Length: 627
Image (cartoon, rainbow, N blue to C red; front, side, top):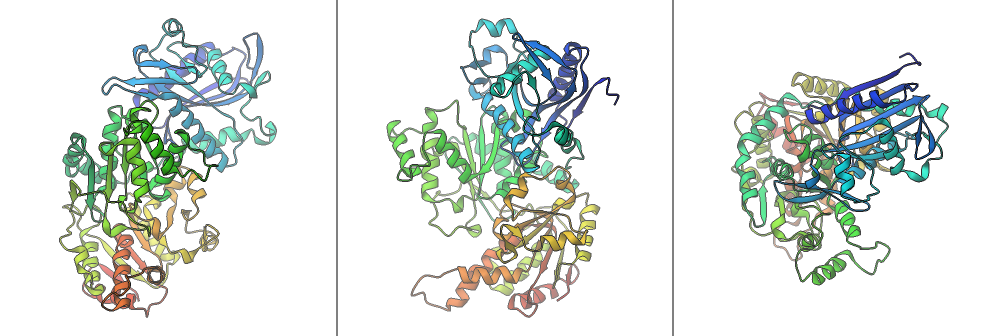
């Protein structure tokens, strides 16, 4: 680009027409009203997706790198050099808008629910800030709410006097700068520069790097996932989703691994969110949170549905909610549950949501509820009431060694396999027979259309094997992200996969080290295509991969055997009873694969190796046993 010109670039990153149209309108307004001497680049990105942030969708990201751009605002001369602003777009008319001194709320007429749009917009800013922090980008991020259907004269007639940065139906470039300054008032001393924390000449490229991260090739739903999603949304689980929505009482979903529990929760949450309800889908680990945020991008849903849905770990959510309700972490003598009980009593034993309806979520969707403690269950019920909680559970997938909450009898029971192909199901049935736990797979059949599948049993995970698995994914129109590698705690040290450097040095295995939680937050869109995922076995619930690698499966089984316990004075072979618990548990990671299940072993002479060999002999047409 010629340095003596101004260039405005539009990057529509999703198929959302409303956001792309708004970005185009924003571009036109800027080009008409920016000072004529201004030079440089303005990038307008619409439909930005950051899978692992507080919120995953950002309507518009406005990024500018300018020079010779001078404005007079409130009698102050502003030298506009650069800025990066998250813009949340709202289409509501003034009748559905309400403002306080610090927040702007919008109503959703279909449900008459009023939600804090400012909080949503602030979370978008924090999402980008965290992304920049993990990539070592030194960029000041501002945030603006754009009320596209509210005019200036009507807005002023309300006399709300809010301090929150807002754009209305008509504005100029100077108004944008004025609102950016409002969002970070104390930082500005006559110039507007997003790279204020560092020397501009050293880190001016941070802005362009951020833009390049977001406009590079995006993750695309594999063909198989697209077919599965369409099948589930419009068919197999549609009636169950409707039943949950129409039931005004507590909803509990029960089913074995791979029956669609998590997908049903997500589908129902998106339906509720599309109607204007604020929903939170809670899980027990960052790995599943990561996958669900990615999956949301592939499920047909409206922008409102995605913006009204929060996906978080349960513990992070409970701590944030408790803090909002006034609990102070520094006061250790006041336990969270005791504090919530006190508030509940003060509210005449009515759910706290009745008091804080504008500012907290309307519905809670809890996955893996079999691991929920009585206190966690009590917390949720005191705040939301049972009728606002939807849970999914499976007794065979319990991870935490705690007293489990009692959720009652499930009203939705899922029985059909919706994940694994038929050959893998057949192999696992034979394996459970070898283990003496055949009841685990009794009555479990894959859905129609899930024919085929392959099992590979090998002594080592080699680069040649990995290359072959990458080709398997490519042939199925999947990305490398669809290779899921599960490892035991013995393979993790200092919050890192111990073979990370070795694998990197091969130059042939690209991976996201999910054993390091910080690595998840720093994933770029390109990594979500080029890299396989590595997680610990205990983080695998709810996850799936076109290819799943159970790395050194005997290693994790030996560790589990040392952990499990049986009741005192039990009658029977204690060792056998402990192994039965291990066998039941190991079925959880073994049921993560869709098309190809890979099992490697540390000791090919172990008992589990013998069981695997015998099961493979029964299915030689689709198993490749190398041990």
